[in-house]
Image (cartoon, rainbow, N blue to C red; front, side, top):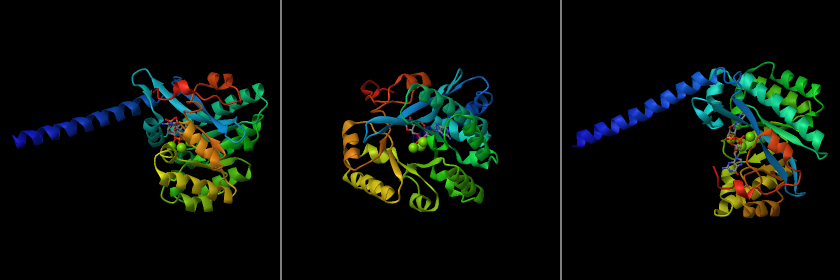
Amino acid sequence: HAKEKGRNTYSYFTNKMNKEVSRRLAIEEQIHGALERGEFEVFYQTQVDIINNIVMGAEALLRWSNPALGNISPDEFIPIAEQTGVIIPLGKFVFLQAIVATTLWKKKHLSPFRIAINLSPCQFRDPDLVSFIIDNVNQSKMSPKDIELEITEGVLLSGHDYITEALESLSKAGFSLAMDDFGTGYSSLNYLRTYPFNVLKIDRSFINDIETGTANKELVLAMIAMAHALGIEVVAEGVETEAQLNYLKSINCDYAQGYFFSKPSPVVKLLMSSPEPQCDINTINTP
Ligand code: C2E
Ligand code: MG
Ligand code: MG
Ligand code: MG
């Protein structure tokens, strides 16, 4: 009996592994050419200035919809795009789309607008990354300060000189640098001290627990105080409730982003929205 149970457990795991491997292979196969087939779209999630109650910008977030696989989440396909090198053209696509979206927003609204774009560690291995960014922004009517480049600790872990140099060049050119998912890594504090960051994004996991865990309340408070002491602005990620927002306001957080205001949405919806933030109650708790 026990032997049979063991065998079942074994086949359960091999089945699970087989499924994971074949899904991975399918994604790898489908991701090639997906950009050319027009399967990627850039969505935008607004970022709100919570002191003046106005939309101050948006984060560009990539979406992939494939006929065979359906919608695949970036958490699943970005690592595969990185391993296959597809991230290089894909990253350029996101950047160019985001510039167009921002230009359109600026035509429609007079208020300032900053677009946040995620950069993967692999994009820094492209020796043309910095000139690609600078050239394209120069050709548009945008100023580098309207562009926030979001990087995670993963970009800085390797400590390669070319990464430090790229970040220094982009910072000198006037781009805003944001440390994404702050608080989840191993040595975020050290990076904050070493690199020229302008913005710190507090990871969603800390915001989630604001109402329940007192420790997180204190941590968020301390992160904001520390960032401000260093002259760094703070964006709170994953704000979903009014209580979270009120707490963030009470401790002088600068900006907030999350389902409470809006889910990531296609560019047309971004352009239709007004600079006065609406809380998007209808989208909360829906997948
Ligand atoms: P991220 O840069 O930290 O982006 C924030 C993620 O939190 C997004 O997930 C967003 O949809 C989600 N989010 C925002 N507000 C809320 C909220 O109130 N509640 C909850 N539960 N989630 C919220 P998404 O779009 O699935 O992206 C996941 C990650 O994939 C991103 O994390 C980023 O690391 C990566 N990613 C997405 N687009 C790109 C891209 O164009 N380039 C690169 N290199 N990475 C990207
Ligand atoms: Mg981000
Ligand atoms: Mg983040
Ligand atoms: Mg993330």
